[in-house]
Structure formats: structure tokens, C-alpha cells
Length: 457
Ligand SMILES: Cc1cc2nc3c(=O)[nH]c(=O)nc-3n(C[C@H](O)[C@H](O)[C@H](O)COP(=O)(O)OP(=O)(O)OC[C@H]3O[C@@H](n4cnc5c(N)ncnc54)[C@H](O)[C@@H]3O)c2cc1C
Image (cartoon, rainbow, N blue to C red; front, side):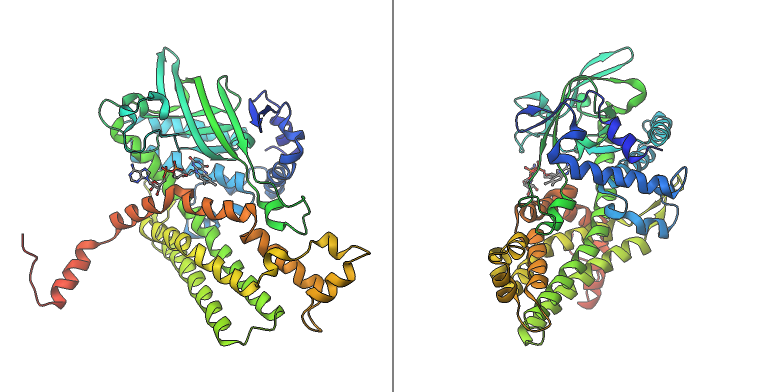
């Protein structure tokens, strides 16, 4: 297994990565990405300390292992890697009837990835062009990643995958079709893994900056920021042993569904603690402001508690109803995973609104920690940001800065959008929930209650 320092060194592999118009010669030395890379490096060191071959990337074999799906547990990039490996293994099983060789190809890839201790990004979202049109109907055929040439030893792919979390900080790009493909769209039914430094891969990074880089003012954006990659495959050769689907259009959606399941389960695991964090902030700031006994504030915090509890209930139900796959892998329940991800995302905006309401305007107008430390004005900040004897200005300022950073900063805005679209968007979660829900049983119950036998045909 690599150490954190070895991971940093491994990024110097000639990858073509860009930021704000410039190609980055040495990403590990770039000041904007230093904290992200350090977080991933710390994750490597944590796993190395856990033993010679960490069990973190093992497929979950029981419910206790499923419980550890939260991506923040080691570091988010290790989490993406875990999801990628589980996706490939789940999809290989689901398509075994059509492409039996995928199982061995995936198993060999997983072994290699673990032996070389790679980090893997999830590349599913194509640029998609005109959303009303299928891949084969697009004016520009490259709007979905496709095979443009077949050679003896493999294929050449072209296209782009957008919004790819941490792409430039991984070693590999798991590249899978975004959705079901039709007859005639065989070139788009391609699933494979591509090294980040492969010839023809270009990654353009985007990242929102924290306020003045002061950790104390911006505890979330400095620690939790994750750059997104705009990943271009400009005629990239993929050797045959790294291909898991090639042309089986009827199996293309299996990869998207498998990724959806594992990503949403991780998102839901994270959402449980995030919802509790919001409740905690709301209660602390209400107490600091002397408002914790006011009825409407108590009611609002009660609403937050209900939302947080529903999110956790869905996660618990997804675990309790998990099932063992044929490959010995424990898989979370899709109904509760998707309903929980939908519920937690839909509730996020209103939870943040309640938190911001309780904070008051100081949420975005409070001075910085540097002002608090200023010889000239620090005493005023401490005095007027304080509310009562037990709550001094420094405490309340730190609390408000943390909540601002989480909910009302550029990072907070990005998080709101990332919750909405991450994991495939609300629409996709609703579709899967509806598909897994027992609608027939619900109809039978309703018929029985109305004293009817069957609906008219
Ligand atoms: C912070 C962040 C991180 C992400 N990380 C990753 C990642 O690591 N890997 C990855 O692959 N993706 C990632 N994504 C992408 C994410 O999965 C997509 O943003 C999401 O699936 C929506 O796709 P889109 O952005 O292309 O929007 P669009 O597809 O344009 O969707 C916009 C709206 O239009 C609707 N819509 C679009 N097409 C249709 C249609 N044909 N019929 C009906 N309604 C339609 C959608 O439901 C949605 O309401 C990330 C996104 C964000 C914001």
C-alpha cells in the first residue's frame, strides 16, 4: 500500500491537467489543491496504519460493513474508489448472462487496482448535448463517449465526461455509459477503465475558493472542498483487458444503475451525519442567542430533528433490508436507498433555511477571526458579538463563521447544487423508488378498503 508521500509522488505521471486556462506542471505542488491532496494523502496514511492490506476496499459481506459507507470515513477519494469497485463488481454480476467474460475482467482489474493502491474516479455523466435526443440522434456524435475505432488489442474512445469529482487526483477513470442505449448505438455501449495519464485524456479542474484561506473562518470550504474535473477523452486507446462492456446495448444501463445504487447509498450515509450537524448548529446558535426556549424557535428545531431522523431511518431501512448477492456481496436495499437520498436532498434547502433564519443577519455580516485578533478593533468585535456572560464574542463568531461557510458561502452554494445533482438528480431517484415500490400491494389495499374487487380493465 502507498503512503501519503508516495501518493503525492504518484501524481507526477505526466497527466494533462488544467486550472484556469493553464496546464499544471506539478499538481502536487499547486497551492490551490494542496489541502485536497493532503486530505487524500492522509487517507492513504490512515489505511496504511490499519494494516498491510486494508479491508476498506473489500466488498461488504455483512450489514456492519455496509454501515461504513460514509465517504468521509477515510477520505472522499477513497470513498469514490470504493464506490467504483463496488459498481464494477455489481454490474459484472448483473450482465453475466450477456457478457460472462466481464466477471473475470472486472475481478482482474479489481485485483490490480488494489495491488497498486489506485484511487478511481466515477465517470458517468456525459456532456449529453441536446437532452431531448438519444446519443445516436445527436448533431455531434461525440456528445456521449463512444468507440471511434476498433483495433486488434482494444478500442479508441472519444467524448467527454463532465463534473467528475476528484478526477485529477485519482489514478484511474472508471468510464461507463450514462444510461440505456438502443439498437444502433453499440458504439456508445462501452464500459472501461482508463489511466488518468493516458494519451488523449485532458482534465480541466474547477474549484470554489474558501474565504481568504483562513481555516478558522472557513472550516468546511478549506477542509471539504473537492475539485471537479471536466474530463475529455480525445481519441484514447483502451486495451481489451480493461473493457467490461462493448456493444451490448441492452446491458448499458446496468452500469448506471449499479453506480446509482452505491453512490446514493454513500450519499445517504453522509446525509445522516450532515443532517445531525445542522440540528447541532441550530441548537447551539439558538442557545448562544438566548432563543432556545422561544416557541417558534423550538418548533423550527423540531422540524430539523424530524428531517434528520427520517434520513437516518431510511439509511437504517436500507441496511436492514440489504440482501446478499450471488458474488457474496451485501447490497443495500434500492427502495429505501433511493427514497432516503431523495428525501434528504429535498429537505436540504428547507433545513438550511431554518438554520439561517435562527442565526440572524450576522451569519453573513459578522467580522472575520482576523478582526477579532486585531489590536485596533478586536475588543469591539469580542464585546458586540458577545450575547451574555457565558457567550463571548469569539465563541459566537466561530459558530457563525462555520455556519456561513457551510450554508452561505460559495462553497455552501456549490454544496446545495451538488446535493441536488450528485447521485444522478432527484428525477432519477424518484424513478427508481417508484420502480422498486410495491404499487400493486398498495392498489390491493385501496380496493379492499373501498370494498371493491378489481379495477376496471
Ligand atoms: C458537485 C457535483 C459532483 C458530481 N460528481 C460526479 C461524478 O463524480 N461523476 C459523474 O459521472 N457525475 C457527477 N456529477 C454529475 C451529476 O450526476 C449530474 O450533474 C446529474 O446527473 C445531472 O446531469 P446534468 O448536470 O447533465 O444536468 P441535465 O441532464 O441537463 O439535467 C438538468 C435537469 O433536466 C432534466 N432532464 C435532463 N434530460 C432530461 C430528459 N431527457 N428527460 C427529462 N428530463 C431531463 C433533469 O432531470 C434535471 O432536472 C456531479 C455533479 C455535481 C453537481
